[in-house]
Image (cartoon, rainbow, N blue to C red; front, side, top):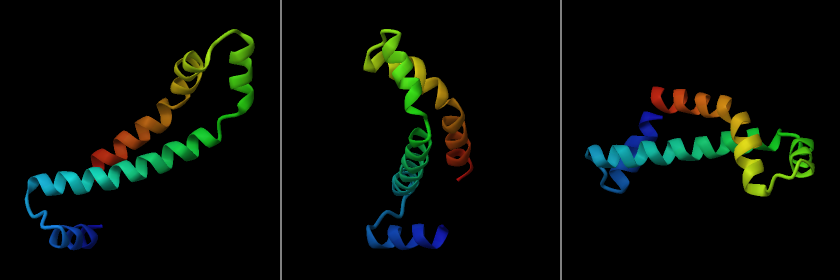
Length: 84
């Protein structure tokens, strides 16, 4: 990963602390989005259907059903981004 960061830093003239922050944020966000998308794709639609039957709207379904399920993957992403 370091040679890639060095190449990008030289190409875009990001040889300071702010440039390093931008590079790490860019790589971290792409990994995070990839992992969250994969995790959300595995959530069964039956959970959303049950929430709809119980009278929850789309926003409440997201906050009451999906977000609690994302706790594990968000913790994993936090640890991975902190390590890198």
